[in-house]
Amino acid sequence: MLPGRRAQIWRYSPEYRRPRHFHAEPELNLVVSGCASFGTGRVTIPAAAGDLLWWPPGCEHELLDASLDFDLYVFALTPELWSRVLTERRAPVLSGPLLVRLGAGQTAALHARLAAPVLTSEPSAAEEHVAEVWLAALDSRSQASRPDNLGRRVLRSLLHSPELGRSERARLVRAHPSELSRSFHRELGLTLSTYRTRLRLLRFIELVDAGHLNLLAAALEAGFGSYSQCHRAFRATLGCMPRAFFGSELRRDMADRFEPFPASLSYRGDQRPSSK
Image: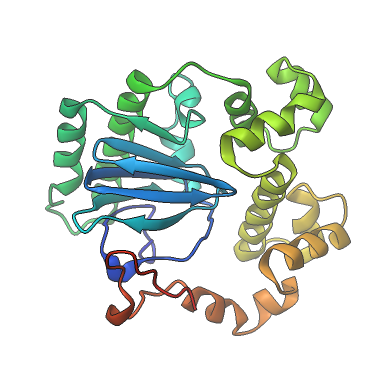
């Protein structure tokens, strides 16, 4: 996101390829031409023109390869704006399948809205435009989505109630506790515990960045049982200790890994750019 923005649209460019990553912002991708494959967890998802991909907060993703005519639009909202535009009617769609195929008319209409220039320099007006496109995309997903399943119900419950324990969540989604992780893993390619930890870490970072809580209080507020549990999860996931992440240049160094790749490393044919 640009500094101070809560919503944004990007158009794919090979030199801006990113290594595998996850973030707090929910993200949608519309493929408008060509074909590609995306990786998430242990799952590879083939995509082609007309496909709409959904990456929930904390769900890792990476563009693995793409045809020379590949083109897509990426659009995302901050969690705060996402919560504001979300309605109960659209909530099930948000936790639907990671990919749905839109009809030709739906694809063309959504493409036109994503490609249309926003003739204003006012950030709030630009954000409203992206939010309207986001809701239009959700309506298209609703018409194209497959029937609900247990893995998606578990994801929906996590996004709405991340604090629930396994037994409570099982009652909520009407399933045996032993079924939750298996179904979730089939749907997203990663374990339920891994995903729940990521959501807690993203919340922990958000709370610390807000400056209202110390590390211990932020860890407890984010859903960890103790600061030591948060510390272990943080180090295992991000490869550093929380105090180093928040109190040094390490965070900037980590962010630099996601800066645009040099043009010489752009993806062409069967070549893969380095993530270093």
